[in-house]
Image (cartoon, rainbow, N blue to C red; front, side, top):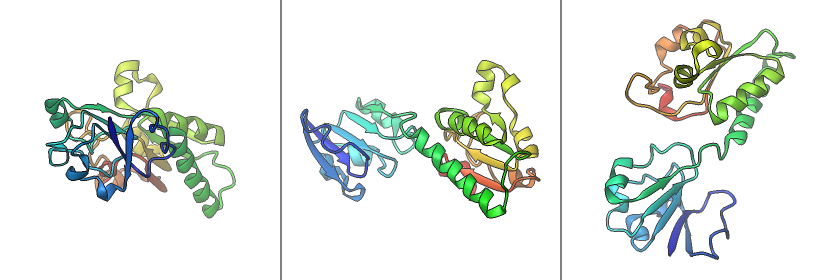
Length: 215
C-alpha cells in the first residue's frame, strides 16, 4: 500500500512507515501524476481533492487533518468509492489558545486590565467554540453562546440569537462550519449589514472558514 502525505502535517512523520510505503510531498507537488499509484491521500485544506486530481488514481481513502471538508468534492468521492475521513477537534485547544492569546494582546493594547463588563459572543459552540467560551468565562468575560443547530436540538434557553450577539458583544469570534446554502447558511454571515448592527463591537475574529466573513 502506498500513502501520499502532505508534508506539513504535524507529528505524522514516521508513524505510517511500519505499515505502508509513504511519500511526503509539498502541497504544490500533490498532483494527479503523483497520486497515480497511491492508495491513500492524507492532506489538509490546501489540497483541492476533486475529479481532476483523483481520476485515474488508485486512491480509495482521503484523510484530512481538519474538521472541514469543503476542499474535498464529496459528491465525486462518493461516486468514485473513495472514503473520506476528517478529524474534528484535532486542533481545537491550539485554535482556542490562538483566539484568546489574540484577545489578551488586544486587551493589553487597549489598556484594559480586567475584561469584566465586556461581552464576548461565541458564534459556533462546537469543539473550538466551547473551549473558547469556557476559558473566556474564566478570564472574566460575559459570554454569549450562539449556535442555532444546537439550540434547535437542545433548546434555546442556553443560547443567544445572532441578533442578541450583534447587539451586545464587544468581541465576536466565529467557530462555525461553512454552510453555503439552506436555513442555517453561514456563508458571508458577517457582512456590512452585520457590522452595522453591532454597535459595541471592538474586536472581530474569524477562526472558522474564510467565507464566513465577507472580506
